[in-house]
Image (cartoon, rainbow, N blue to C red; front, top):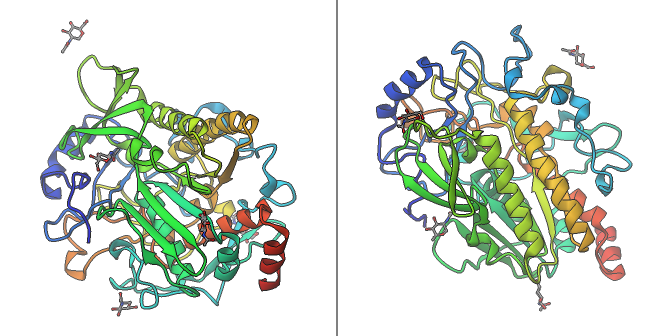
Length: 465
Ligand SMILES: *[C@@H]1O[C@H](CO)[C@@H](O)[C@H](O)[C@H]1NC(C)=O
Ligand SMILES: *[C@@H]1O[C@H](CO)[C@@H](O)[C@H](O)[C@H]1NC(C)=O
Ligand SMILES: *[C@@H]1O[C@H](CO)[C@@H](O)[C@H](O)[C@H]1NC(C)=O
Ligand SMILES: *[C@@H]1O[C@H](CO)[C@@H](O)[C@H](O)[C@H]1NC(C)=O
Ligand SMILES: *[C@@H]1O[C@H](CO)[C@@H](O)[C@H](O)[C@H]1NC(C)=O
């Protein structure tokens, strides 16, 4: 079912264990090791598009990962060097002027509150849960992380109603473009919809990276397009300085793996994130421009923020220039990882069992910078698109997910016998069911507010509510 193609990047050709001495050495050299690994680097498992990575904090080896623990007494400015002073304040993250979801109530600012009725599906009722996000199957002992809902300050966000969603997307199509965290949302959506209807596999090929599902009863199509960098990416070296692969990124060329197929879609959810921390060589106008963490003498390190910014710029420009594209573009914003008590490669884990309150942490450091970088590109592209009558919407998941250190698979994304040893904890993806289901609560709320339905259809869906 899953392809064994070249995207098994996180494992490369080496066992995880082999990497350790080199990585430790790099850290002791005081280098900012921002890299990638997979916890699934064992040969019997066909992990294809599952690839993830994490950020590690800047040089101080004793510092904790990039979020503030409520119990932590360490300085909250440990990543201060990464963050321009103008971004220190949370309230500098402001709304888009024309964003209809935020006029009356900002649904993306709020708190997690208990929801005894959740979850709305289980690993028994939904077939679509990816192996490595099926935390209950792999023995996660606490189920409390599934029993929360998002409560915006000043209003309510209804939990996902599959019947309402399906009415809104009747005769329409939705594409997810991005990496395995984007696929995480698609699988959540498949599970949520499976409560009321069925889907058939309408994939055009066998590649798990490009799946398409058709809901016959509603004439609705969902597809995912694997494109972790959004731009054309060529693996230059399966090893590289961190043994996580070295990529040549053509920062001004959108990845045709999605751009060639996306114009018929009504809704396109674009996301990207953790892959950009990997070592990569940057190309622009066909010429080498610099790199991120390539550790090649005399090559300028442009930082991963540079690559991230250019990739979004290119992706949005491609969408704006796509002939025949009339869809609504959603940017699903960066979802922070949560490694505590160590970096991703030093035993860092995400073992919490409950969300944080918003006053217990804040968006800062690498997370804030990633978020602002994509937001700035989004705003520029949205302004340009608006002139052409195209819609851009912000699916602003970052703050809600920052509060969910309890929502990751940790060691429960793999079989018990593989839960110890050299395998890393997964504090990047999200368990299903789990907090990622809320991304679809947001999506539904946004579709409802679009009001793009004909009067008859609108009345029909209103009655269903
Ligand atoms: C679902 O999770 C339970 C534990 O909650 C486990 O016993 C069962 O095998 C899992 N089933 C599937 C199909 O994953
Ligand atoms: C199904 O939806 C597509 C658009 O996604 C539309 O072109 C087509 O006419 C619809 N089919 C029916 C039978 O309504
Ligand atoms: C695009 O697809 C081709 C063929 O599947 C593959 O070789 C290439 O690596 C893909 N590009 C990206 C960026 O995934
Ligand atoms: C790097 O640049 C310095 C100064 O220009 C030069 O002496 C050195 O040979 C260069 N190293 C490499 C590996 O090109
Ligand atoms: C956060 O807010 C809650 C509820 O308002 C309060 O009980 C708690 O003490 C606050 N925590 C911190 C760290 O300020």
